[in-house]
Amino acid sequence: MSVVELFKKLLRFKSVTPDDDGGLDFIAEYLSNFEVIRIDKEDTKNLFLFKKFGEGKHLCFAGHIDVVPPGEGWVSDPFEPLEKDGVIYARGTQDMKSGLSAFIQACKEVESFRGTLSVLITSDEEGNAKYGTVEVLKYLKERDFLPDFVVVAEPTCEKEFGDAIKIGRRGSINGVLEKIGVQGHAAYPEKTKNPIHKVAQVLPHIAGVDLDEGDEYFSPSKFVITDIRAGMEVTNVTPEKLKMMFNVRNSTKTTKEDIEKFVDGYFKDMDYSLVLNQSAKPFVTDKESKIVKDLVSSIEEIVGKSPKLSTAGGTSDARFFGEFGVDTVEFGVINDTIHQVNERTTIKEVESLYLVFKNLIKRF
Image (cartoon, rainbow, N blue to C red; front, side, top):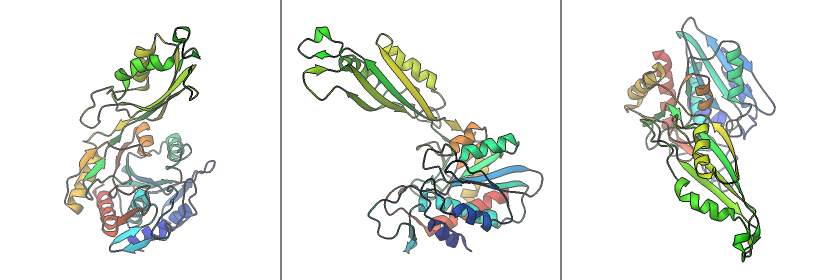
């Protein structure tokens, strides 16, 4: 089976989060010369395959088989790949069955390797990811079997294949602030405490403000307000409280504690409450790490491009590897139609990604 044939096979699995639709069983059978560990929890399926070739480093390829719901308006069946003019249309083509196909086929064809080669695949990356990759990493850590290096095959390229890899990701911190006031008649403002008026005085100092200066790889952590609501949608009653929601995509220079101090600096004299939830922590892999340098060299050799090192975008399961101290990079096809109707990628990109991964394995 070629990498493109494998790609089309994986696209036919209706693996909408967190259902793998039998895809992980197929992959385990396809890589039958690898040892199998299944770590299924609640409704999430997790597959870890490994093969010890000898003494040496442990290189792992990671990804997810689950996809988001297809939605309406496709030109064809979203789970029956349509090939047209060198392009394949189906849900998951970019995010991320192209990446899965490339590293699975590359690993299948390995005959020798200095160390351990493994594959980690979950069925819940597009959902809450509570019982996915992180559970496998907990299992591996308990057995002192964490990989030394990881490639997550998420789509990373921007305009042309090979133009970008990710060596880190910003974190994500969500906040809910409630400002308490005293409800009353709009005609007697002196008898009320209007939380809207109080917060309005603060907004120019916090809305869209950079919390740090960023650095070589991270843009500044920005305080982004996403929702403000108060009142009963009437004109003659001032509200009892105001609720404000915000998000900070934070670099390694800003922590949850920094945000608490920032907010308190403006609200400390007010009656307020604040709840912060960190859904992802930022991480960055040293650009001198073997995995970064070898992946860049492989891309240069196969594609003829020198990729930029990026940390842009949202979150991915790479964050979990970062939390466990594993040198992690991400590389995959162009990211321009993920989660869209008529998601698609090119056959050339899938074949090139497979060749890059083969070259990377050879370098180890």
